[in-house]
Length: 351
Image 1 (cartoon, one colour):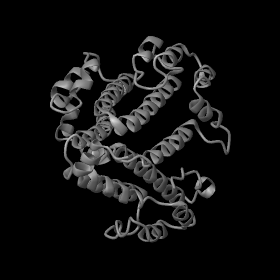
Image 2 (image 1 turned 180 degrees about the horizontal axis):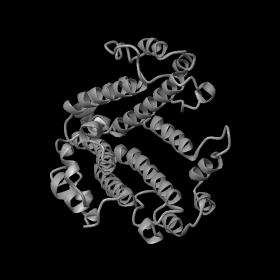
Image 3 (image 1 turned 60 degrees about the horizontal axis):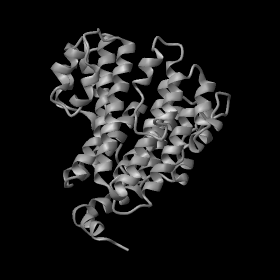
Image 4 (image 1 turned 45 degrees about the vertical axis):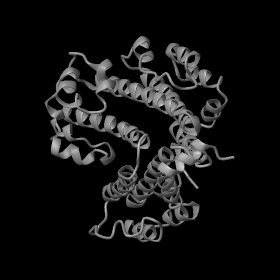
């Protein structure tokens, strides 16, 4: 039975929820992918995409098409749809949508710092940044040589400023420091977003806390696996784990002491949904990687989010599903462009 809170939800957010559910119906289906993998050239791919919701989004692009052009136009289409939602929403949905963009801002900052370290010109790096995470101060990032300078010159006026407080130091920026900064920012961001969703309560809290808990745990597993064979100490590694997932606190304690992949797998065995992901992953020919298994689980989770009414989780789910769709199309386009068809079917089906 509909309660008063749900009735008020529709007054403020019903139109946009209906709109995002309409956007979701345009996500590529199994039949669309079967057509795409049969393409011989990128021009064929363009023709097949024209018959879907993508329409003529590549119509003004000159031949020959490149994979990077397709990638850019896919991102551009997502950003147009997202900005339409953002421009027409009311609070607290406006803040919720802003939170979604913060992860892209973190990725952009890390991309720019890494590129600057490798002496790449800023004019070459800016176009590679994700448009959902763009902000005014991005172009000033090349003047920073330490985390403290990065904060004072660039980040102090951005929404990421509070997340950066744990990263400020006078150490020079190098590859290891940059990865620590990335993971520290993500930890603070996920915990903050989780807390915000809890404050909203209701169905939004239910769907989003589940989604963010999985994201936090995925990061904890990947940070641990990637740290083996590096200079990162166990103590420093443990500080990077987001504490809003199902692994917190016991699982994170065990991950913090893990010395190899088998021990990480042992931690996952204590959690039914993660045990299934690790059991299905492998590095042999034909096996799915752990990363692919995580993506598959995320797609399943995001699809389930659309089963619930009167909640903001559908907006987050839509962005995540479109992200996966973009990865699928770019993967197929790369295989077509390089005439490497052996692995063209290694995309992750959504619907």
